Length: 210
Image 1 (cartoon, rainbow, N blue to C red):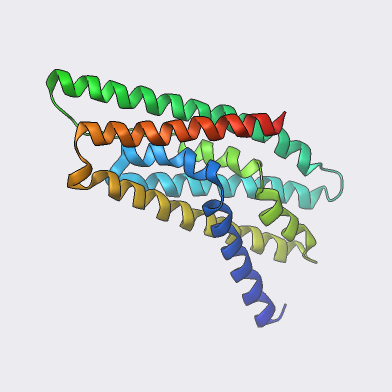
Image 2: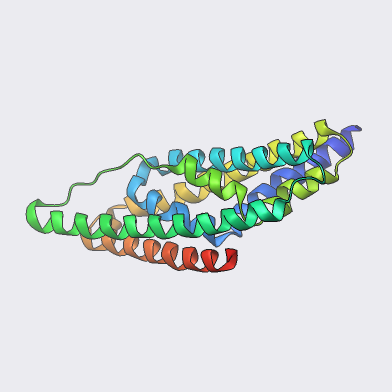
């Protein structure tokens, strides 16, 4: 493996992972409600999601490398898409309940900002098994001549997804924690909007998997 080929391989994998996250509305829909709730700590949620996504892609990718030609990536992806759809709807419902519960609490005894630990790793892992992950991550890896090169591509693809999701969630968390956005009404509006987006995208994904 020449230095030029290695550099190109790593750069391509990193870029593909970043683009994969940014261009996937399901990814953004999944993390946005969590990021609004986490606020300043949203970057941790993004990293956990990215690590989970990388684990999912790596798991399917390594299995595909071992079972070249015997594993149907499309079957795994189709079933995962259905589960992702249900999961996104669940995240959206959780977000709506959180938004209106916080609003009711505010009316009763004032606004109290809080954060929750979210199952971001698990959500990211399922996302890594579904959708276009196999197009940008697994298929190019399978086309590489050696297992070492394929594993290297999958690794940097994962780093790209972690970087992208951490960046996105940090931005959402920063926006939600600004003084002008700290009122209960704005917080409820942000959470409700992102949660409805998650439910809509989840419904679309579930229908795609049928």
